[in-house]
Length: 217
Image 1 (spheres, rainbow, N blue to C red):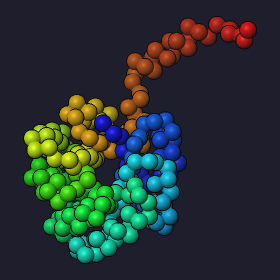
Image 2 (cartoon, one colour; image 1 turned 180 degrees about the horizontal axis):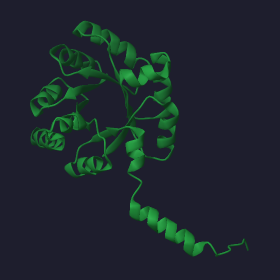
Image 3 (cartoon, rainbow, N blue to C red; image 1 turned 90 degrees about the vertical axis):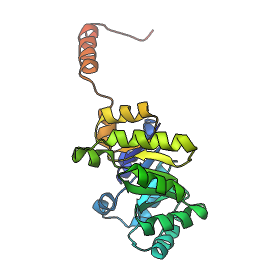
Image 4 (cartoon, rainbow, N blue to C red; image 1 turned 60 degrees about the vertical axis):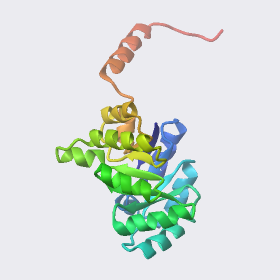
């Protein structure tokens, strides 16, 4: 399973990439806006920091405008994945853009039926929003499991990109289900490192070796 980080913080992306922890990036308009930087300039820098796909949202609402903006965005760098909403116009634009060889991430997926439409439209990725479903008491992980089964039944090539992942446990659950990609903020990925027993063992080890004096030969 590939790990994507959900951020527009270039330094954080570089740190995680250097550690081998992430394979791509997802962004949102809010994350990009918070940097105060021009979109094209920021996206180009992020795309240089990571070899894998970098998902970026469009602002347009109709198919023609989405296609125009999507082409302009994907011209910024070859690893840009254009984020399109799960709407009729978004899926129409997806068909055009992927037909032209552009990567597309269809977002705001909340049902398996929507995921079916995304793959029929040729989406490179489909993003079921696990955390947002769980916020409403629904089974987010159950949805990605259902999508995985359907895609496997027919050999669909669209990659399942589990979004809105908020815990280390959900990351592990996604891996058990066998999805292709999961994305989460940097703090969630870093939290996967920690465990109270790891911390205790490190503390005990430090006490045990405190008196050991190692010198070079």
